[in-house]
Picture 1 (cartoon, rainbow, N blue to C red):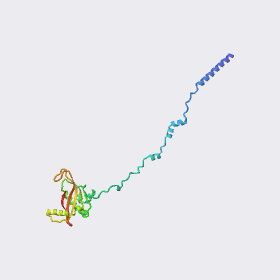
Picture 2: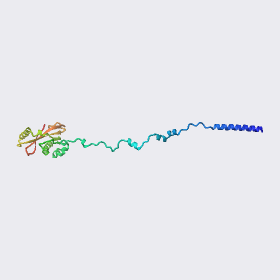
Picture 3: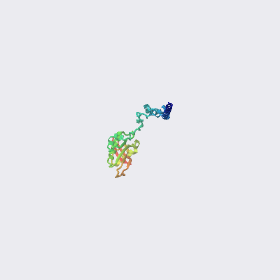
Picture 4: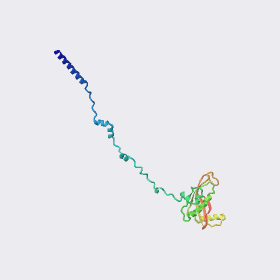
Length: 222
């Protein structure tokens, strides 16, 4: 009986030792410190979005450049210099038959300022100049300009016109004269008295008439 109690005690002790050993083997390893909610929030995408500044449509509008409706400065008519009516190409089209018969839309007619002659008086004289110039083969007329009142009706010039008239065995007595200057280009091949392919400027045209009479082309040149 004593023997059985002793064996039972040994078995019980052994079972207790095994149980303790089993409990010691199942002890969990030290857990790493749990990530705090604050740390996980920093690492999460949601936290990243919250950390970045919000971009609102209002902020975009404020950063955008000025609206396209703000147009550049307008060019006003006052900023454009006025062209002189005396030397503009429009004067050639306004000169009537004189400019049209010149055969070139680029001919400029400058009527200048005169207290002696009207535009109608000048057009009548210009017609004779253009008619004569039209016989100059290969030449291109560029402009015709009235000289000035001071250069026209002087006693010396009227006397000169009458001397030319007498030299041509004519009997008309002139009381008025008018002078225009012109610019033109000579033929590329030259010919006659012309230097080839040259621009002539200040070429004079002298005309005379009697009171109430018609203009007569008297001379031209330098």
